[in-house]
Length: 189
Image 1: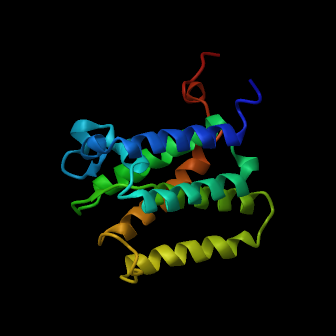
Image 2: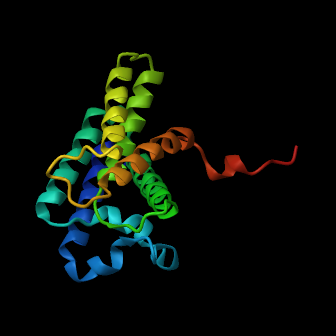
């Protein structure tokens, strides 16, 4: 069982699921986040992050996920990777649903911002204080996107909101890591 819990097992399973969903193009309209209908349907809160505009978009997002998981492999088990993807995905989607902008999007980039922010916070907390520089650069990048600077390769006018919501989800990931649901229930003494 220990072998199954390694980070690379979780990464492979997530990538296989993502590729499968990307191949199911007839499902994409059902799995896509849309601010107007996401709370009635529910599943797009998470599924939208695992489908992409095209295979290039998917390739870059999958590569980003693989880099984050491999570089910070000491922080990941198969279980925590799956939990982190779900938590960050749902948190990002709920934040995007709550803002007063009508959005429709697909892709993993918001969640990647959340995972990266989480890893940088973990590094800083473990004594690698210089990681503040990278975290500050990530925050500055997201703020500059929100202020209107967006590279030409951005698809859609609201990508900055997606990245910002994902980055905010990193705080939730850090707060919830290694917590069990049973810890939230008071025990009778």
